[in-house]
Length: 319
Image (cartoon, rainbow, N blue to C red; front, side):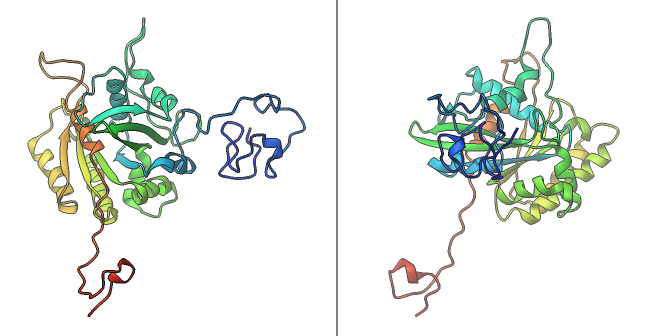
């Protein structure tokens, strides 16, 4: 039960936002009159500033303490395969199947969150792996959030990444109406992400509602194209082991490219084709390597003609 009046503090699950080791010393802490076993003043244990679960907006500042993280916004309709893609990446990293010459796994603040996403895809005696459940739009249980990974780049620099795990309904509402009440989460992702992955569901594009699936992708591409501000976008053909008509594929591709001309494309599948099954699926590690190299484009200052070398006055100066 939350007992702090600050919206940005989640003590006792995390440390006090104002820095008090004993929450009873904090002026914003609401005393219940009963000693909370999780907040025992006689204990020398210091609670970690993270719980291991998926992060929220207020946790971004903590992750950014050692450097600005790269946030990858993963967008797509319901059941497109967004969460399954995240789960597959986590499992591949966990068993050492992701081998990269540039990036090596260096930790995560959301291991519990990753485990919650990937649990249904892990093998257990007497059960069979399944695809993850739909991401709930409610906050209880395994809800939407930001999943964190740290990689060491080129054996030296540490880089932090945040991957969004959000329900497809958010993006469907946002694509139709940017100001919709149910689109607040999607709008926040669109404003703050450094790069985007649009997940196209090949199963939906080959099924009975393929027309609706194509229209939903077109709406999403149009909305993202209008708000991306030059940030990189990648089109991901999920479940690519399911064949779709060439006309449909071309129609989707042209619809996306008409809004985002520089979009890159990748095809991924959890199931390998033929006898070449190495347990890595198709295109999953290649897409992860691509995502780890995505960066927000830096805005170049316009060329100026000036007779000064002082950086403070250089911009906008004229002879």
